[in-house]
Length: 324
Image 1 (cartoon, rainbow, N blue to C red):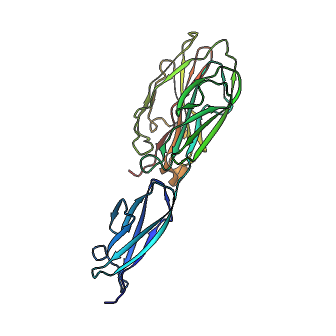
Image 2: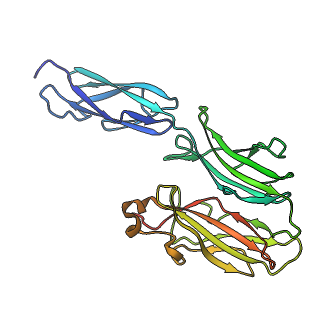
Image 3: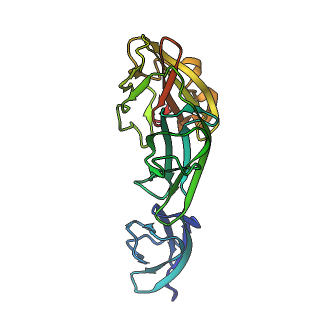
């Protein structure tokens, strides 16, 4: 029957993402080189995994750096064999982006300016990630009131004219940071002011999928505007910009979804209203279509004299191609 114990070969990726599940599989053979199933060759893992399924162990590491996993197989006659595997646990920096304001935008003193961005981290939040983390805004002008400012979707008004650079930054719990910046200019207030927009939240607030919506989903959001001088009627225009799947490259820019002089409310079902092929299909992107497209929805309110202002919803992802 031979004298040697079981032999083990471990199969696993050399890197593991911090706070994400990493798997390692033990392929066990007996002294004769035959497969040895768990019922005949039991396994002991060190350190203990979060769970085990057959010869596969599942780990989740909460600190970065090198870790060593060791496994010992014991056959029915008590003979043992063991081996180990080193894995590099990686903490990835956050990813930040700014949707509003756009580069080169101009505003006036006292105008409410939307600061809209996102900050995510691959290693935070529920599986599979990435998860949202806190946003922090700063201004290059030290006299600007209200900075630093927190929140990924917030508003601010500037009290002085001139150029300034706004920076959105985010830090993960391990201290890694990322930032993005945009330069804007503040001008003196005009004689006639544009409408002031009130924009509610998108519904449904919970996506169909982990990170986005089926393109057959009806998306709504309440919105309205008032004009300081009463220059009515106010015209509402919803526009959308979409991006290529898995990319920051623009696919379609400022596509008009609807125009109204009575209501600013959003009511959009992508599959029923897809102008300019805003949401592309398999013929456009191939297999990348299954990644979904990021879409930015922006409301423009224009008074009867042509003065306008805008507000955007936080970016969403829309899926035309799915495997349902």
